[in-house]
Structures are given as structure tokens and as C-alpha cells.
Image 1 (cartoon, rainbow, N blue to C red):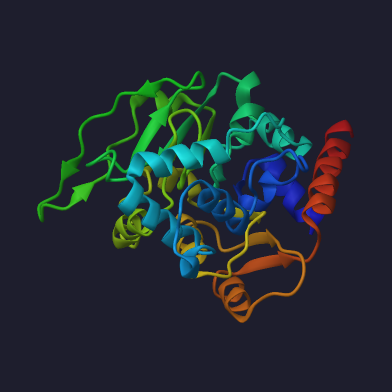
Image 2: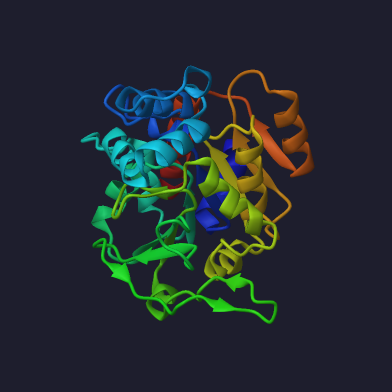
Length: 294
């Protein structure tokens, strides 16, 4: 499927959806690239009951409840405070200025580092209601400065609705969307049970997803890479973010699938590429470079 995916990239018809696995591409110096690795770092910095020590969202909730939200934020920031350089794939994604939207569903800043050489893009990040009541997202310029937005509005029922995209965001050539937040530029993290409950309560009606993201995704295909769909949280976010997009998508998943993953891929019409992440990203980059040279 290299040819299909490459052609979609060149046309700008695809939306890359980068999961935790992509974070591990730079090698051993990379930040945590699996929820299992991340929770180990969190519990190393705070005492957590044994029965939830391997559960990222539950362990995060315990730390938030008994050690304060600031402790959780500091531990997350420490876990992703890496000097690791972006991988060749991160750099290549950032060079594709024909892409209007890139979704980055993890907490590291490798993709943002890769975009540092461009000034025609911007960032929108998910934020928690506990720290940013009334806002579902924050908007940032390439230099990391916050873009002011209007206060949240309410519809006739009194429900909160997302703020419209700031005017300057409409001129960005590429929008990076981090639905779970990220370590840069302001340490916004959706990671605890309560964080997810707040978002999932509204996500079926698309409230936490920026209007601009909803507009860009229309008619486009998603390319999932570095993602697994083994748990309900991963599937729910992917399903809602790709809603009302194209009916053709791809996912690079190496090895045996779970029954839930098989069902999800089938329901969402996602073509599975059974290949290692490193091999496929290298082949994809080489394929596009060869096409560009012709």
C-alpha cells in the first residue's frame, strides 16, 4: 500500500495520525513511547497502590487526588523532558507543507521540534477542565506563544461549546492537533481518569474537537501510524476525530491483532499494513523522495 499512501500524501488528501509508537523512532534516547513505560516513570516519582501501578489513567488519577494536580503535571513534564532529536520520519512529516492537518496523539515534543524550521503552522492542544475551565483547547503560534480566544459560549441548553478558531489560525498552512495535550509549550496533559471522563462525556457530539479540525478532515483519509487500538480510550478518540472524513484509511500495525482491533479496523474501513514501524516509515519517505525526483 506504499503507492496508495504516498500518492495521498503528495495530494494533501491524507491526515497523519501519529501515536505513541512514533515517539520511539529516535531510539533509546527518546521519551516514553508506550503507556506502560510512561506509568513506570510516574510511579517512580510518587507512591501509588500496587493494584493500579500499571494502569496509566488510574495511577495518574491517584497522584492527582492524593499528591495534587501540580505533582502529576510535574511528573509528566519530567518524563517528557528529553533532548532527543526528532526522527527522520518526524522531519519528513514537517516538510510536507501540502498537509493541512497532522494529529499527534501523545505527549512528547519531537514533532514540534521538527516543525521548528517552519513559520507557517500552528498548534491546537487539548486541555483539562480542572486547569482551564470552560476551554477544551488552547491555540499556540510557532514560537509557543498563546493565541487569545473568546470565552467559551453556551448553546440554548446551557451546554458549553468550543471557542471558534482564532482568525490567525485560518492562515496557517499546517495545523498540528494534539488532542491529549503535550509537554510543550505549556505542559497541558489529558492523562487521568477524570481528564478522560470530561472529554469523553462530550466527544460524541464533537464538542472538544476544534471546529477547524472538523472542517479540514472532511473528505480526507487518515493514516494511523504508531497507534494501537487495544483499549476503548484509543478507539474512542480515533473514531471521533476521524468522524465525517473519507471512507478510506490506513493503519500500520505490526504483529497479531486483538479481536477488538480487528473489529475496529473493519468497522472504520481502515486498511491494515502489517509491517514494522521503522521499515514502513523508511519505505514511505523513500517512495515520496523518488516520486518527487521524477
